[in-house]
Amino acid sequence: MNGDLFFGLLRCLRNPKQSTRQKEEVHHHMITDMSSNFKDTTVKILLLGTAESGKTTIIKQMRILHINGFTDDERREKIPEIYQNIHDSIKQLVLQMEPLGLRFGSVTSERSAHYILALPVEAPEYFTEEYCDHVVTLWNDVGIRACYDRSNEFPLLDSAKYFLDNFARISEEEYIPSTEDILHSRKVTTGISKITFRVPIPKSLGGGEQEFRMYDVGGQRDERNKWIQVFEGIQAVLFLISCSEFDQNLREDPKQNRLQEALNLFRAVWQNRFLASAGLIVFLNKYDIMERKIRAGKHIVDYFPEFEEFSKRPQQQQSCFDECDWTKMFIKQKMIDITHEQFKRNSRNQCDVSYSERECYYHFTVATDTRCIRDVFSDVQQMILSENINMAGSSLF
Image 1: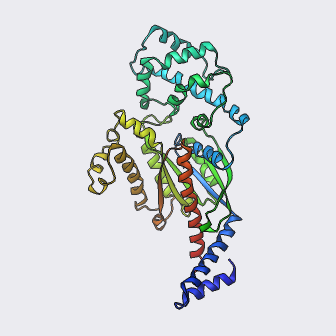
Image 2 (image 1 turned 45 degrees about the vertical axis):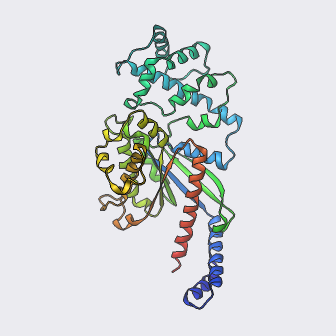
Image 3 (image 1 turned 180 degrees about the horizontal axis):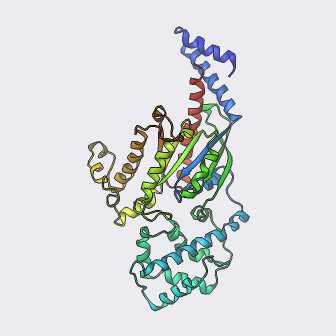
């Protein structure tokens, strides 16, 4: 920081007779000077959360919002991934019919099921007319739809309905994936990927641009041991938790509730000493899917009995108007309670109790909604930059 500005600020603080205008001018120059220093550094953000919480979708959104999206060639490169999503979805639905005790609605559907089951796990390189006819027949079958309604009982992509509803368009010969198609596509993240982009800095924080680097790491249990490789120098952690997974179990552990797994993971991240100095922002993601499930008759109390007691709290009744609101607030409160827990260092990865006094910021998000993510990330960006400036300012005294 410029020495004249620093001593000017000290004089300003020590001299109560100095005019408010003079104080504001010194403060403004101090903020501008510090923010210009931050422009020369890269803000590193780490995305954490369980598998299928939406981390990779956030990376795609950053590309759409800050790096001009995807070229036609890059869109075409996504076609095999989207084909595989469709193939996996229809095959999984057919496979689950018998275990769930469901029957196909017609003999034609049964023939289509035999056709799909006889195919390899890998999706066809091209969707033939025969393949398309069988997929359409199955997706229109009442038995398959009943199976989909019970998809919380087995692993199925969140985007299954989206892709099968749009199958006629996707199966066209000249198909090029839309931005929404790309956002809904799913591929298991292994290892570590990153994206670097620049965003405008608000004038109130000095103006100009700031470089951000965002890291995405696999959320499966066997991938989490790689996370520590990117902990160094992280200024903020975006932790994603899927609100819609309250009625589902893990792919890798069918006995473990997905939401409970995410809460356990959040506790481990919150208490991790290597991340103790990083800002922590929580994206309570996929609340749109959560709302659809509740309206379809699913209830979080069937999986978290303590919800019943929570829903009777008088202090929450003014902000909660229906079961969807109560469910969102319940999940958020679960995370708030974790941040208030007293903990001791019983492993070398846990931080000391004193670190638990830091703040955590919460946002309800739909990762596939570009407008939602743009607005939320704008708030996150300003919070990170403000926190950096505040920390730099407090470290001077």
